[in-house]
Length: 304
Image (cartoon, rainbow, N blue to C red; front, side, top):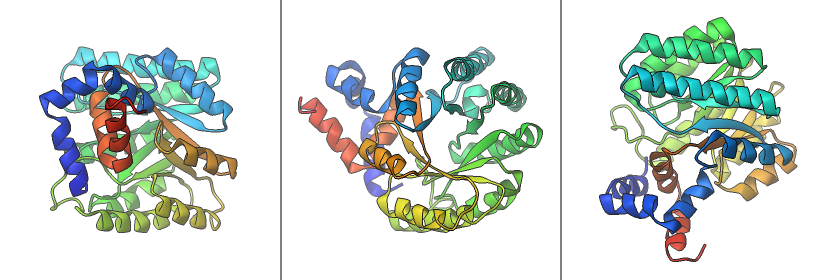
């Protein structure tokens, strides 16, 4: 994570900033740009609109680590609701899940059971489950649970983070499992001992892993970036690829570029976050690009 991002993340933890974003009209206006709504109905409507424009989607229920069984089971039920809505509405999409929302931090077995349940349900409607990668303390368990579920169901995907030093070795283990591999830069604050710290180093690591994935057989690369240089590299490598692949971008981030890519015939999937627990997600979006923070400041000044 860059120095800019670290400063923004630190600032957004301040009580006054949190209050300004969550309790004011301009703050909510910013959230509406990056979050599809507070409930599944809103997300399904956004997904349908994106589908009409030729974009696939991944429904992303916001919320992260939970600490009790009831909350974990409730999150699993809401994920099932999302899968069922994809099936009933004929949405071209899948779901994105966080294993800590399914209880990973306190009951690994419970998280594994819920992951199995979701993969099975998604398989029934011909869809997939994309497993997000979270903070580094959960990486080992996430890879283990993903591998076990993918070997049984074969319809999952996993996110890997380019800034982690361990990711090349993880890919050696993951690529033979098939499915889709989502490559992103990484958005958590991690120490230099396990993660690259500068933008240049992270970009270089991303480019190396991108080439590895795009040249690999039997797996679907899902390249998650809004960086024009890395997108251009992806498109060049795609010309040499015979198997499936896709670009992945976030709802509300560079929508014009999203349309340009799909209009040019490239497969693009949009992550569609929804739910009431949107603040932590929004802070990461603000930290990623100065343009996002500029939009926030303009909204606060009434100049959207």
